[in-house]
Length: 188
Ligand SMILES: [Zn+2]
Image (tube, rainbow, N blue to C red; front, side):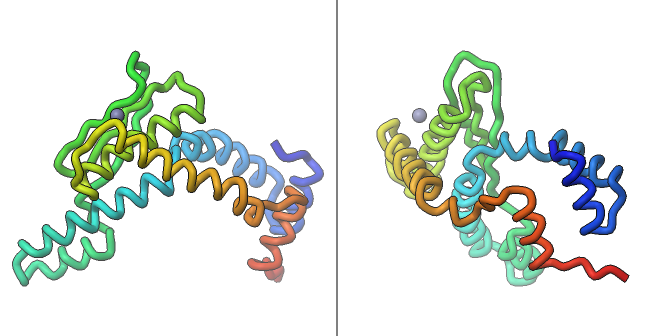
């Protein structure tokens, strides 16, 4: 939670009531942050989803009649998807499993594992999806683990080498001044 001095600073800088700032903080903490946490490896999930979707859209469009240009447009701009990946934490005894269906996949993973292990399980299950939908190779546990290795290694390198560039060492005050520099509030 941000302290009262920071609330006053934000209130002054953004020309907003302190109550409104506290309300928005509570809203972010209760409804947005917990959900961000559940979207493990979301860039990776979305990228695999995009690639499978592009492939399915291409096949679909080859079969679609000419007068379905509107539908084609929606598919090309991704407003309409033919494939989606859903992550579902469940209280089961298994580690993880994936249910493949015509329009996507549901990755079920053990809700009681710690975050690091959940990410490993999800990366492995994404490996099965990539094998099956993109590489069209014989799916196996070894190939799923190989994908998990490349994906987690890539993420790990990002966190170790790149992520610092995206942080604000001066924390709240540096974030406030950076936002103000890029998106200044003009007071009337
Ligand atoms: Zn597996």
